[in-house]
Image (cartoon, rainbow, N blue to C red; front, side, top):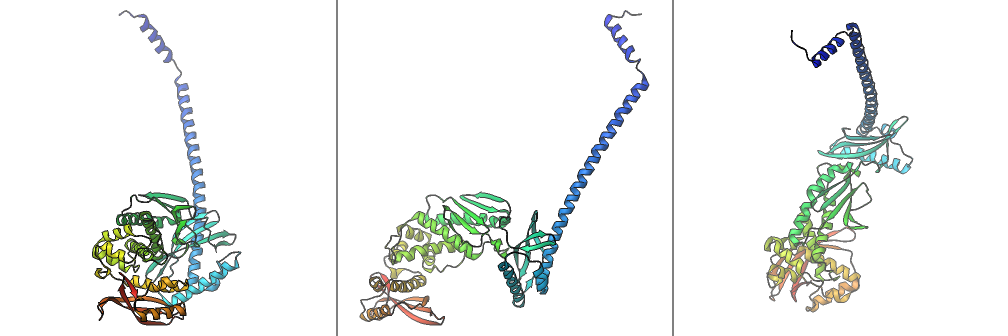
Length: 457
């Protein structure tokens, strides 16, 4: 036998004590623990089932409400498609009789459109949003192969969803994004439009600044609002913010959310800002500088949008002498600049050496005649004519005496020639529209006198 140390004896006593525990008691304690665990698991599973059932029921209810809204829209479009005025009218509801009357006009417009165009009224709901009893949907329609989106509003009454007047407070969450020097603010409905603006406008600013050599690209904000009563313009309270209307307040063409008219307007605002920033000169009322400044703006808008703005003189100046000529013209423009500034910008000594298209300039001069006559400013009126020719002077004074004609003259052709006396002339053809709408064609002659084109017929 070995010798046991004290600590070994103590450990053996402890083992003997535990080994004496009742096995049945230990088993009962294990069973109780397992039962408690099973109960807890069961209660957790039951609670999960209850939560799932409640969530499922809520989702089912919401889906049913949404489904009813879609069905209502489909029924309304079906009424338009088949020409059922009574069914269409039953879905419209408002306290405004004016709005209800307008809905009837819309119904009539659809029926008329179906006779003149290929109209597909599918009733397909592209987007829907529900906020309590309010509903907003975007519905597809296809006209002559082009997809449009109509945004309509509905309200859930006791007897179901009904088409109601537009509620522009229900236009989605407010959003903002920044691209280069441009910040765009918009609501959720206008997200696709904001995408187009973000992809388009920074390029316009960069392109314009390259043309006019900005010292710095302007930092501007574009704010899209659901308001059909505004035209794109600078906000009265913020000279660096342009407000423009959402395309979705009317039928929005999905392939042209940034419509051409709105492009021209916004492009004009940006071009005007760049011109003002580069050369803030304010032209005299009847000076060619006024035409030149506006022609520069129109040319920039055409560059931005690709839409013809009839800025023929500046367009051909850039095409013949390069963009640097346009940059020089703007930089050297003064309040009393004449058309001779075009020659200087091109690097030639005289207007007669310029190889440009004068049609828009001559059109402007003819319109200016009427403006000066209306102002009863005989001196500036006669300055538009080659009064060194007595016959031309007499003709001019006779026209001045008659007063404004209300006619609109547009030069459609102009060619430079030398007449029998050796004078440089522009022989032009004009389309003339009288105040009563009648149209005719007239020949107009301009002669180079004192370095500028003056009317000689």
